[in-house]
Length: 358
Image (tube, rainbow, N blue to C red; front, side, top):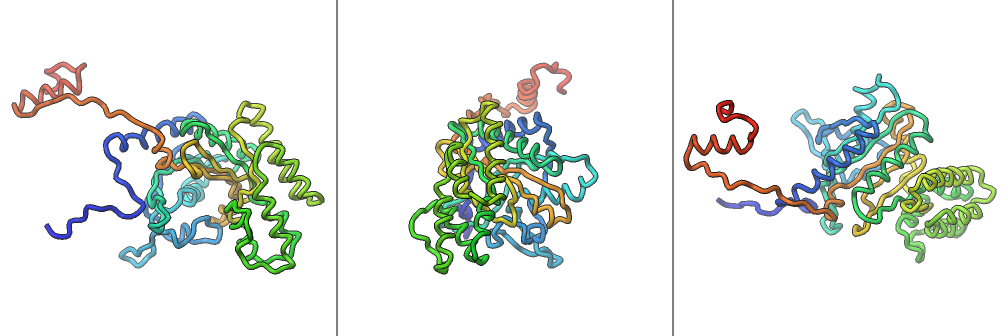
């Protein structure tokens, strides 16, 4: 044969033997947690119409979406994200269900990642989406679910909590255009306190200093005290800090304090996230394995003003920390035809009489 392809696309992996067992075991454990907490499973197609993700409330870079056309000329996409498809289902097939909707999933997502980024183009993602209901109660439910999910992922699990609107509340006091706002968000997210790498007018140097300060606002509750000084006189920013503080305090009282970190430098696309945002880490993996928060604005893209929050957990990344043992195999032979077939059936069904097998 000519041109036999033995390699696989960049960002994908073959899972061999024990490796192939691990994701399923983690997946089953996570789903068990979700089910016991009242979440109900949904599954969506790997192929979606591109318009499902093509809206201004989307958190996915359009360049990372695999796109192609079907035979009718309609643009399709390999699912790059689970939240939008789950919301689509909630706003259509489940629109008459009692609120809040507690939904969970475990399915692959696909991202068109450049080879030199050394990231996965395909990953198994598990998560929950909570739609409708009281915002504070559902924030608490979502964070609790995330903490319990992180516990089974690895050692020294940590959840960083911030707020999508804190930066915006502070930056509103300065004259700055949208491009520079986005540049500042990128600067904060990079956690690089060096020289600000973007072009910003001199009149906005205080905004750059603000962004630099936010990079250092992470740690225990003492961070809130420092942040309150930074937000002095800004009522909206102070209310956000108060909400973060009360939320962290409740979980600390419940025994989860050692898993929580406050990070006011977590910035997301403000059009997507609207409230608490969080990221989960486990020892041994140098990037977040869980990401989520409140995303009320996304529902607007689907014609609804309901509130929503959720998270996605990267099972593919977490799998690298786990091990599995292959089940033992009996050395069955089928060389003797019917007699060996009977023996194999008896091996698989030891409680069934031989006569019943045939």
